Structure formats: structure tokens, C-alpha cells
Length: 148
Image 1 (cartoon, helix red, strand yellow):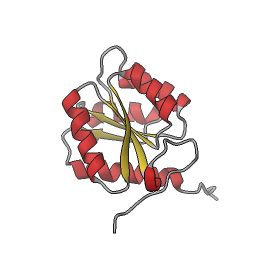
Image 2 (tube, helix red, strand yellow):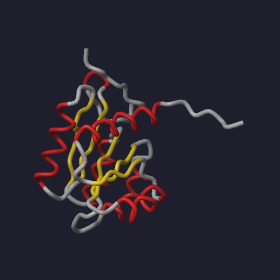
Image 3 (spheres, helix red, strand yellow):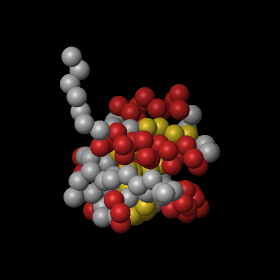
């Protein structure tokens, strides 16, 4: 039986059976296609949109209100790094996973401080990406308990 994770709110992108909605933001057509296959093959995940640069990423995040955004850092016109704070403003409930060819040790702290939920280096096993999407969506659903 496929595992299906619920979405959080009525403002999230509408998906059948409560699937986790995913926006893919990358300037490389083949990378967007590959990520689309990774997401599409995983039960409970659904691609709801794509963006080719940081401007499109902000606009689509605002319009779609997805559960999870896969965001490349190095894109033309406006980088993912530059767009990340605005994405978090226009889609505050979305969990952002930054995918980058940059070595994690060089940029990971910066993207996490800007509001990303995860940083993943490009080239990892696709299973890592699919699992990260499920994990950050689950974290989004988890109740917040005060630390005492």
C-alpha cells in the first residue's frame, strides 16, 4: 500500500489524496525533468509546478503555496540564494530544500540561516531527495512543543 502524507493547510497546492505538493526550481531542463521523475515515482509526492529562475520561483511559490520547494542556488536572472528570503515571505509554510552543486561546507550554513529546511548536494542518490521531501513535509506537520 502506498504511503501518503497529508498536506498541512487548505492554502497548500491542491493535490489528490493529500499528496505532498512539490515545486521544482532549476534552470536546467534536464535537471527539472530528472527531479520530476524522482518526485513522480514516489507515492504520496506530486509535482505541482516548475520554475527556471529565482523570479519564477518566487512567483510560483506565491501562486501555488506548495508543501515543499526544491530550489537550485545557481540560476540566471535571480539566484536561488537571492530568492530564498522572498520565497519564505510569500510561502511561509513551504519547506525549502536547496539543491546545489556547491560543496555543502561552503554554503550550507548560509542557506539554513535564510530559512531553508535542508541542503542537498546535487549528484546524491535520488532516494535521498525523495526521503528529504517526505521528512521536511512531516516536520511541517509536527506539532510544536515548548522546550521546558
